[in-house]
Image (cartoon, rainbow, N blue to C red; front, side, top):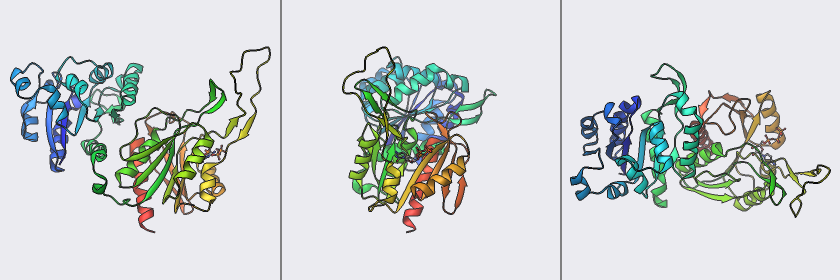
Length: 399
Ligand code: CTP
């Protein structure tokens, strides 16, 4: 049993918080609710108290509670703090580090992991201010779920809906996995070692400049987390990204393709390798000193980087399952099929990057194998990760 402190913000989706409480209780967790002032307008403390079978906390100025249990204690007695729905306003106050009500005060005072499930109008979600705040929260180590996409209460369509209570409960359990003692790890991948590469690589031009690409690392990090949640021992070899380390994974940070290749080699043997990194195909013959502006523009001499996926797939210590990714803008399946054969991977997850996938929240993928193509609908990157991890578990346990 884990103790979850659920902060219910004020949005139309707050009604789903009752479902979430019920679901978490059903899964055997203790839930204590904090309702913001705005949250009061959408759900009553009585409902949450009845479902959680606990007192509901609403104000910082309840002196009795401050005497009995200060907000510091309240925030630290939990194993995880969950903000659902996390409104644009609550996210902004969290990102700014404000402490002007009970919810934000205990969020600032806590030393426990925090997970936020956003819900707001699509324009509010896509507004640069909200995106900036979400990026700040993620950089601070807070897990911010991607909102669902679909028709909204306000009549508009797009990302901004609160994820379904089931999905939030799954994310909560994944986040709680971190606290579990190693002997308590369970799942179909227990005893298996999986290697995941993620993020871009940076190839230096001189001590201050480099060549990079738009990979955010989010898909690879989500896959590493999803594999760990299924019990795998995961080595996550990450290019330069600022994402928090997914619970239960061992992270090795690298910068260049050659460093990534060396880290992969050092991490073998593995039962499976999932190469999600957007490895730079070329490196620069880097200058030792900063290149100064001169009369003529400098020429960059490029050399090809090692193909890490091909090396692993064709090496002596080849994992039983080798999965590559292919970012394509056109002829997605054809290119991926050719890549499967050329690199000798078992699966290529073909990624249609003609839209805003690089750095975005969702992904349209096709799993290309020797047996055919499986196309998935456009999904949130965490859902792609969950399904792919499940498929990997199935393939490894079938052997
Ligand atoms: N990859 C790798 N090492 C490299 C380049 C790519 O491990 N030096 C892996 C990626 O992690 C990914 C897959 O290979 O899993 C596909 O990479 P991609 O760059 O799309 O393929 P390329 O072989 O470069 O083909 P093209 O540039 O023609 O698309």
